[in-house]
Image (cartoon, rainbow, N blue to C red; front, side):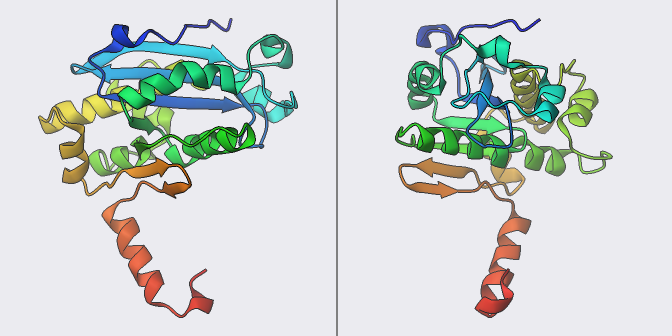
Length: 228
């Protein structure tokens, strides 16, 4: 059963320093959002979570995506489209302009596509990827999929339920901070050479590691015809 939990008022998560985000989509179209999961992080814990169902703009659900997350057209037929939910979420991102997601390129790409489709201005915020963080903190894991890392840190994941995925990403950050003995996210990322990505009106920069940046410098030294 799909249970919705409202986006809380700002004062209910006043101690938040970061927000974990997860999107589920109806198809391979990046902006086809059908669910949003959120987890507010602060004071060394997850303060609150939210789960919102969203009506995709074209209601085209691919069977393969339904098989992944279990959301069907009838579940979202009468739900609001993305702009209505975005109006609720944006004040939180203005108050806490730091997002994290497991495989952030996917979730930030979905966000950018939805904002562009609906003609919404891009917000100004930073973001980072907990896949990159998990690889740095626990390099010996078999892989760094969300299910694998969640099991490693003892989080009971309900995979592809958006709020559970967001909460898992939040707990990855919290566990990494606890193991490092740090209470500051920026200090943790700096320790592992992770540079947050940036989103702003008309601008996007990916989250990167030292290895990513070294690889980019090597590519930049190649002749243009060899860079791709």
